[in-house]
Amino acid sequence: MAEDKADVKFTGDHIGHGGHDEAAETIAEEAMEWSRAYMSREDMTAYAFRLYLEWGRLLSFDRAAASFVYDPSMEEATVPT
Image (cartoon, rainbow, N blue to C red; front, side, top):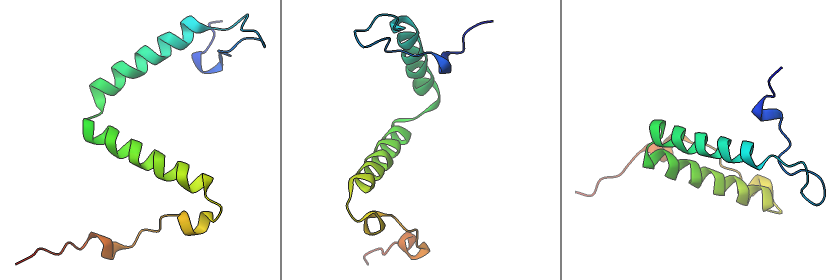
């Protein structure tokens, strides 16, 4: 039975023996190709922004205060006249 890429242990033992560098490289290359084909630059920017927000929230001592709560009034744009 073929080994599923998601189940591969990439690092090997404590000194690196038994790692799967080739599998990790293949997965990274395929992910890069997929992102170029299906994600726009704006998508990647939004993803990175959300990732950094979540990272900051996880590292915050007060996670509730660092959490984002959606409010529809945030979408109301004011246009200067």
